[in-house]
Image (cartoon, rainbow, N blue to C red):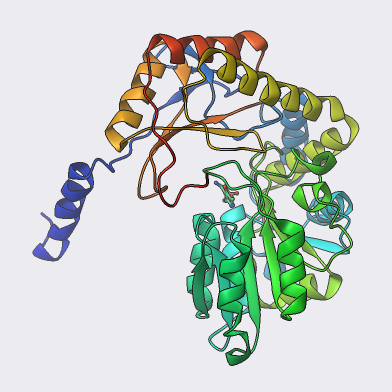
Length: 398
Ligand code: PMP
């Protein structure tokens, strides 16, 4: 029996249920692609971040099998203590080449990359300016660093400028932002952020999780905005368009060398598995050699936007410049109902609700492997279930 000290857990869980914030997990049978099987039914999958469809590509699977046969399943320890395989460095060189940076360092997840890098480069005497809609891993890294953290209004340069008036009270200043916002699909104003950072002697860290493989010839938003030559720190994940698992930071040689000595979530954790390392390496080669995958993804994005506009002009979509399209709904309950009704009608698309976002929504994530008929099915089902969407509220991008 649990002692009284643990009773709060049940009460907290009840509060989560009462607020309609409870989340449960669905079991996918077999591989996850443009379609998935759930409860024995095939559904069109708009819930995956596997933007290029590489997570079930035979070449990635074969690379993972070969690496496992050669090196085993586990990496057996942290790289500083137990050594690494040539595969780890090969992947880091491939990431640096893709991003056109001097070097890169791979972490066991994007989350670990963000908390490790941020907490290594700033501390108690420093200031972090963070976009209010940043991913949780950036926010956690900021808290962990012990720096003073100020959230600025979403993509609002005037808001950043106001907070920068305090810059001189701190030793270092770091601006952190998603490049593609994960729950909205819009882009940060990267060139302007870089200008501000330069003017005020700040570092800028940009999270390319949803941009890598998708924008800027696959290199991400930094290339998309023509900012490759500018000084900044890029972080990202190997788990979305690269179809594997793991995270990375890309930047100058000195930065990477410093992080190998100072980032706790790199130093004190087991190296990325050989299978995931080899799969990510295979994915980078594919995205460089097969631009047609990315081009197909962008055709799909344009086609779905057009279909939605033609067939359902009354629906409120957040402005998006990525593979993430969000349909706003008036309440958490209506978003959940919409997701259930979509699923009943053969569409897998998640409801995203507060506290993750200010306004509830259905998040539609597109893949290069979706066909026109998948997208038509989505729009027909949305039309048949007669969703009433809401206007963007205060706090949403307009
Ligand atoms: N950054 C962003 C913007 C993300 O969306 C995510 C994953 N949802 C992460 C970081 C974390 O990446 P990973 O899943 O590799 O931990």
